[in-house]
Image 1 (cartoon, one colour):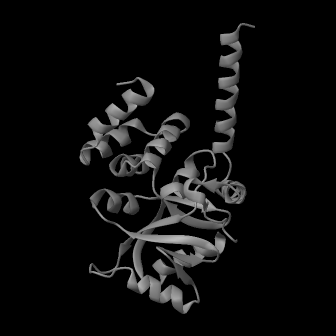
Image 2: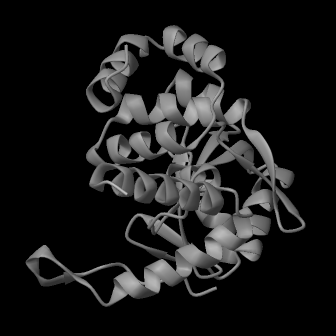
Image 3: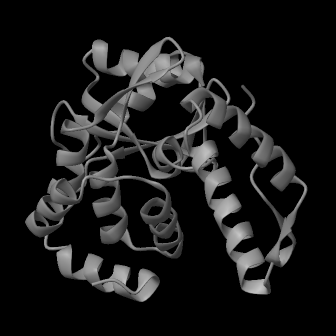
Amino acid sequence: MERTEILNHIIEAKRQRRKELASLTYKEKIRILIQLQKFAGGVKKPGNKRNSGAWSI
Amino acid sequence: MDSALRIIKELKTKGIIREYAIGGGIAVLYYTEPLLTYDLDIYFVPVKEGLDVLAPIYSFLKKRGYSTSREHILVEGVPVQFIPVYNDLVKAAVNNSRKVNYGRLKTNVVGLEYLIAIMLQTYRAKDRERLVTILEETEFDSNRLRSILKKYDLYDKFKKFRSVHFGKN
């Protein structure tokens, strides 16, 4: 496989994955969002500020 | 989230607001892959026009024991920002919102084409970022979008945006 072919393959796989994630139910997406908020909570933003906390639901 | 959405729905059934729809990042997330956001933006049509359209909402929610935190009110653990419809586009977006299921609950989300139009209008860095995601990942109705964009004088801006990011006219 050529390098461009490999790259196209990877890009297409990522596109498919995003499409799959987009088709999840609203409720499932909110569950994932809360996980994202928890992960991001530990990351410092410029100016030594922290990200807002995760929803406590 | 179920409880927060139920309370928001109650604002309408109790006649505290005329209509509402989820907007912002949580609306975008309905159509795309999950993305990081922190606020639940609720666009609403007030029952009466006036200076303090938020007062009845806050009064109702405070009586229920919910507290405010900066520009939000924390409803069942979710920071909610109530935004009165501030122009004709946002008002039309709320009045033509999409009825969606959240588990067993029915709620309103700003329709995809209106969401695109609102983001084109507000055009902050995060709106532009989300617009790229939406245009890449969703199947919007081009005719409906064109008609909305033309009505609110946003069609040229859209064409320019699409040309810069996707090389299309």
